[in-house]
Length: 177
Ligand SMILES: *[C@@H]1O[C@H](CO)[C@@H](O)[C@H](O)[C@H]1NC(C)=O
Ligand SMILES: *[C@@H]1O[C@H](CO)[C@@H](O)[C@H](O)[C@H]1NC(C)=O
Ligand SMILES: *[C@@H]1O[C@H](CO)[C@@H](O)[C@H](O)[C@H]1NC(C)=O
Image (cartoon, rainbow, N blue to C red; front, top):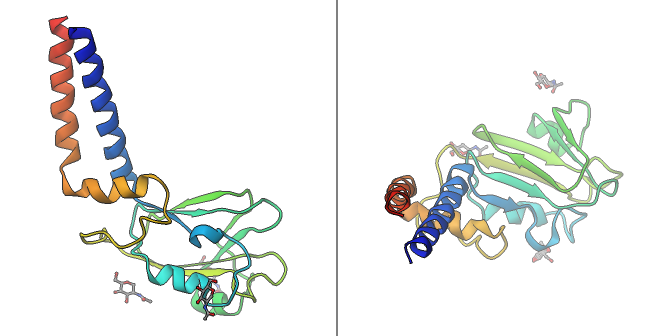
């Protein structure tokens, strides 16, 4: 009996802890939603995708692509980005899928360095905000990673406090056994 409660309690703690981890780790944004990272149907596809997102520090960009078919290069300026120029690459990723954690605010410029992929619109410019998305969360629950809904919703509570309370409770149960 007590053992079951203890188990349930620890399980709850684990769930809460994962939610907290999710919140400090930020939201996962799947670049291009269902299409992933590929040559888009038109030149504004990734722009349109980015426009609907609130991307902030601690969030992660998830580029879904097959190694060899596509890659990601990062360039430091809008000019290089607009020109699809690989003259001054600051980062290169080629083992898909790639997850990039955004640790600084400001503009970031990515494109695919394979063939003419950038020229046809496989390019993404984002502006990383230093503040989290305001509540209510924007409409990106439908196409983001599974923990996005959790990450958005548990901003409503104080997860760290809950986990602490939960652990104290579990420890008390543990000593009672
Ligand atoms: C680009 O393609 C997307 C997806 O097929 C579509 O929703 C969007 O309307 C298109 N935009 C233009 C400007 O054609
Ligand atoms: C290349 O990038 C570095 C920063 O990574 C910057 O200091 C430099 O000015 C850039 N050069 C050009 C030509 O964009
Ligand atoms: C990026 O976002 C910040 C606010 O978060 C804004 O002040 C800045 O002008 C934006 N930059 C661009 C190029 O849109």
